[in-house]
Length: 361
Image 1 (cartoon, rainbow, N blue to C red):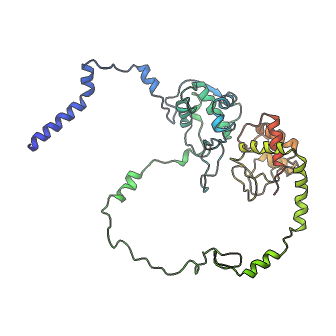
Image 2: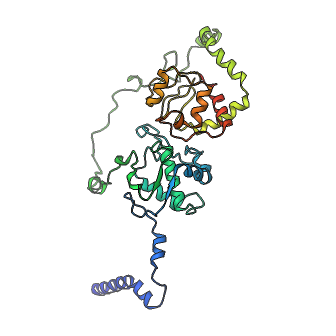
């Protein structure tokens, strides 16, 4: 077969493919899509608000809708349950080894939140959330991240006025221009670099782990050393025992079932607050020994001015203060950075306080 004939056949196939829709129309197949059908399919919302549906929703309504349709996966306060993603908190963690990527710490545009909720949520029931409910859920998520107050109303009119904290943390993907050319050169197949030489052993560089007796980890120590160590009495310092006694007595006086319930409630706090041995400040301060501590008194954590002022007045986190704060943080301490709306149930607050009272330094 000649080259020219091959070209003609190829051109004929191209023409038939390109003219397929036209031929289908001529054969009476299908019909043009109606504008209403196209509008129903094209749900995209752009960062400038293009594509938004008219409507509005407030924070309190959003809290109710979120509790009904979203909390089973994302938690009452958007803290995430099990492997479902956390949606609130995480500010300042993007440079950590395990960053917490949420709407308030990572997402660049509010349009992504609205579009995703309206298009895909809830899981297993996509597009069952109405337009107004979508505005309300989005408003509640903004509130949960401390970005708006509890009386905020989000609508298509003020949508473009809201900016997320990490909006400036994204930039255009320039890899096609900057990186791709680096991988389009002729690959090196031989003598591509200087030969590798071993100059020192790890033990010479003092990076090999050692046992407590100073020997390289894994070597067999003298059996007499082990025997003498086992025979030595292990007595806890009296001062430490005295300090631990009051906390232990307090824990024993509280109903263990209440403490267990409080530990479950604390899962709603764990995304921002750490407890236990070695606990460090994160999005929120660590909460070891919080009961009875001066308000705003954790070293190294930057509190809101309100909590700092309370501490300077001599106020402490006693049961009454904790109960009031946990019920509605932003009303108890205006300006607080606490991101969730509060624990509505008195029983949940009592259980959580009981659990926190068992935590020591």
